[in-house]
Length: 531
Image 1 (tube, rainbow, N blue to C red):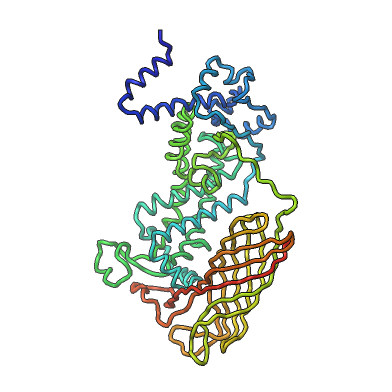
Image 2 (cartoon, rainbow, N blue to C red; image 1 turned 135 degrees about the vertical axis):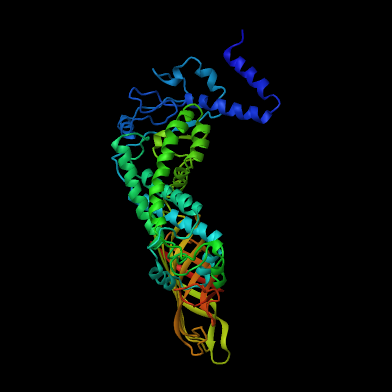
C-alpha cells in the first residue's frame, strides 16, 4: 500500500503536471512547515509560544519572564532529543531531508522592563516624516519649485496667518485625506508600538492592549500636528496656508470660472488634524484583527505565506514602520517571534587594536572656489578665490560623521573678502591607510561686497545660502595624522533681478523673491590631527 505522503505526492503530480511552476510553488509552501517544525522551541505549558514561534493570546511580558531562565534551544544539526520537543517526533529525521532551510536560527527571547525607547522612536518618526516630504517632492513639481527658487524661512512663517480653521475640508480628495493620511498616521502609531516593550499584545479586551493603542493614538496626534504646522511640516515644505489655488486647475484667475473643480483653497482645515490619528487608530485595529484571525493561523503552518506574504500585505503600517526600524517588512516587534534564515552568520567586524577609531579630527589647510565677484574693471565676473580654512569632524562610526569647515577668502585681484561656512555629514569607507567619503554640507557664504538682486544697482554686503556636494579622500600616514583632499561643487542661491513669475493670482502671502541656483567648483587640501 502507498503511504499517505506518496498518495499526496501522486495527487499533486496529476493536479499540477501541466503547470510546472505551480508544482514548484506548491512544493515550496509545503516544505516550509517542515523546516519550522524542526527548529521551533518546545511548546510551553503556559501557551506563550507555539510551534511557529508566534505569540499566543498571552502577553509577551510572560514570555519575557520565561526568557530569563535561558532554556537552550535544541540544535537542528545534532541528534540530541529533549522531552516534548518537536525533534523527538518519529518522522522528524525523514522530514529534515526535505527542508529548504537547514540552518534556521531562532532569536532568543528578550527581557523587558516595559520600557519605552525614546531615542529610536524619535529617530524613526523623524525619518518617516522626512521620507514623506521626499516622496512629496518627487511627485509635486510645485514643491520642487518652491524649494529651489523661494526663500524658505520667510515663506514658512508667512504662511501661518493664512490658516483657515473655520472649515473641515482642506481641498484634497477622499483618497488623500481619508486613506493616505490615516495610513501614514497608522505607520507613525506603529513606531510607538514597536518601541514600547509592553505593546506587543494581540487584539483582545485586555487593559494592556487598549492602553497601548490609546497611547499610540496620542503619539499619532502629536506627529500628525507636527506634520501640519511643525518644523517638518507641510507649512514649512510647501507653504500650505500661504497661497491659494483651485485643486485640479491652478492659480490663475480663470480657474474661478470653472466651478466643476470646486472652490479655491489654501490646503488648510480640520480634516488632517482629526482624521489622521483617529482613522489611523482604526487602521491599526483592523490590522491587529487580521493579524490574529488570518495571518497568525496561516503562519503557524506556512511561515512564508502567512507572515512573509499575508502579514506584509494585510498590515502595511506595521510593514512600513518595521523598515524604518531597520528590519524586514514582515518583522515582528518581539524578537522571539521571528526566524532568520542565515546559513552562515557574518562574524562581527573586529576593530584593529593598532588603529582604533579617532572620534575627533581637527585640521587646517588651503581652499579654492570659483565664484562670481564684484570688480571695478568688469562689474560682476567669475574668478578663482584662494584662501585658508579649518575643518572639524566628529566620527559617529568608521563610516559616518559630522563634517564642518570654515574658509576665509581674503580680498584679492580687485575683489573684496568672503567667508564660507559649511556644516553637514559625510559617509564612506575607511581602510587601514586611506579612506574615501561623500559629503553633503549646507551652509553660507558671506560677501563683503556683492550685488543684491531684484534690480538693485548698488553693491552691498550680504549672506547667501550654499550647499556643498562632493567627495573626500584621506591618507593616514600614522595614527594621529591624515592628509585630506576635497573636491566638489558648491551650489549658491542668488537672488535674481526679477520677481517670481509664478505667484498665485488668487492670493499669495509669500515673498515675490525669486532665486536661482548656480554651481561653483571648489577644491581644498588640509592636514588633520586626529584624537
